[in-house]
Length: 199
Image (cartoon, rainbow, N blue to C red; front, side, top):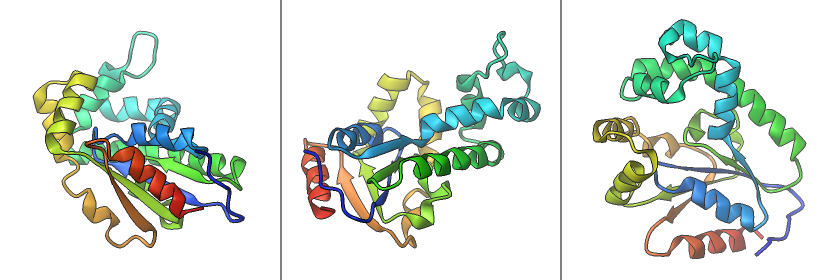
């Protein structure tokens, strides 16, 4: 179902806790005609661009023999450690924000969706018209994380714990919040209802 484009394009944020299903939700929106920016993938580009600063801060043991960055090992170092995670974000987020702004300029005039785990840290956060928050039951997220990422349980629980303040980040935002449930086949119907509402 392609939606009709309003005269004024919408800037829509998409986020959710770890393994709630926001990327699947993004794929549903894309199939229905919206333009999607995956900021997490964009972050990989930003991380690679700033890798020398990351090596300097976190050590050369996170460097592959070819000089590229071992993101998996870096993740083990920062997740569950708020200070290290914040230091990494201070390096990567400015570069990711620049790339985000460039994408918005190039894609202007359409419904744009910013898909980001750390949406509240994006430079466009206060300019969003609407925010879709994807939710899923705890156990669903837990076993999805284990199956998808094949991490030890302790690493998964650290990632879960790092998002304990997730909901509070969106309490004061000016954008309209739309919560969708990624369970019991509800998601597609809720996305269609959301799109009907922005026609």
